[in-house]
Image 1 (cartoon, rainbow, N blue to C red):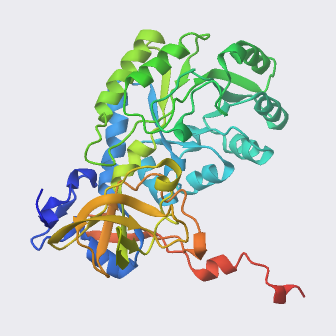
Image 2 (tube, rainbow, N blue to C red):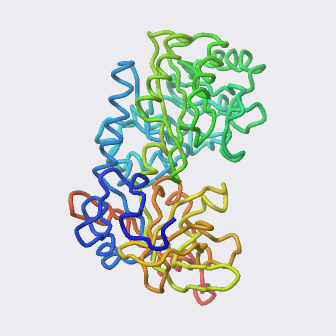
Image 3 (cartoon, rainbow, N blue to C red):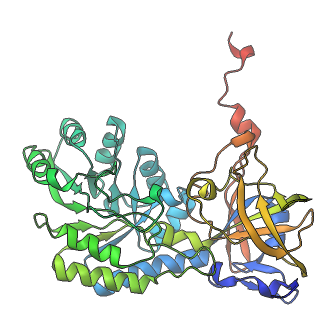
Length: 427
C-alpha cells in the first residue's frame, strides 16, 4: 500500500457517472469543479449530477418497458423528497411513489402526473386519504382495515386500490430496512389476506385492482425479488402487481450491486413465469435511482491526533443519518491534492459520539480547510436532514455540463426562528 495518495487514487466508480479529474487533479461533478461549488454555495452541500440522474431515470424506464411494455417505474420520493429531483425524473418518464400527503403535494408541485402516482402509508390519516382521492392518483395502497373504512367514508366515487401483502420474507439487509416479514408493521399477513380482500370488495367505493409487496431496502441479491414474485403467486390472481423497490447500490469499493438491466431481467422473467404476461407491472426504485448521483461536500474544521486521528468536518449526522441509524459504510476522500496517506475517522460537528461519517478510512493526511467529499449520498441523506445542535440544513446544488444551479437553498436561522413563539410575542 502506497504511503502517498493522489487525486487519481479516488475511486470514481462510486461517484456519478461521468465524474472526472481536470488537468490539475481537481474533482469535477457534472463538469463543475467541486472546489468552485464549495466556494459559491458553501459547505456542507448536497451536489446532484443532473445529467447522470436523467440518464438513470431513462435507463430504468427503458429496461422495464423493453421487457414488459405494460410497466411503470415509480420514483420512491421518500428517498429524495425535493421538487427539483422529482421533477427531473418525471420529465424522463417516471411516475412517483408517495407515502404522505406532503410528498404527494410536493410531487404535484414538481409537475408529476397524479395519474402516474401511487399513494402508500401504514398509518394514513383522513387528510392523507382525502389528498390522494382529490388528486385522483393511479392507486391508493391499502395497508390495513382502517384504510378500508377511511377510503369508503371519504370517497365519492370508486377509487382504484391495491392491497399490500406480506411476502413472508426475511430480507438480507439491515433489520431496520426489512419490510416483508410477517412481524413488519407494513402490509397484511398471508393468513389475513383473503378476509381483507373480501372486506374491500364489500365496499362499493373501493375498486380492488391488484396487490403490492415490498421486501426491504438496500438488497444486493436478486433472488430476493424472485422469491417476492413467487410469494405473490400464492394469492388470488389480479391484473396489477406493484413489487415495490429495494434494489441496493455500491457504497464502498467492495460492494457488488446488480445493474438495472440485470434487475429488470430477473424481475420481469419471474413475473412472466409466476403471474403472467398480461399484467400491469409497477416498480418503485428510490435508492438505486438517486444514491450514486449525489455527493456531499464538506470542509475540514479541525484535526485531532491522539489515540485515533479525528478529522472533523462542518456537517455530520445533521445531513447524513445513514451511518448512525443503519451503520452504513461510506467512502470519504480528501480531494484536489496529493499527500501522505493517513488512516482517520471522519467525524461530524454534533454533540454525539455516534456522529461520524466513516471510521478507519485511508485518505490524504487531512488539514484544516481541506475539502472532503462523500459519494453515494443521493438517497435518504437529504430526506433525514435535521437541526441537531441547530444545524442548518444544506443546500441542494444541481450540476450539469459545467453549469450549476441552486435547487434547494440553504436553511437559515431565520427559517428556524419563524416557527418559534417567543416570550415577547405573547401580547
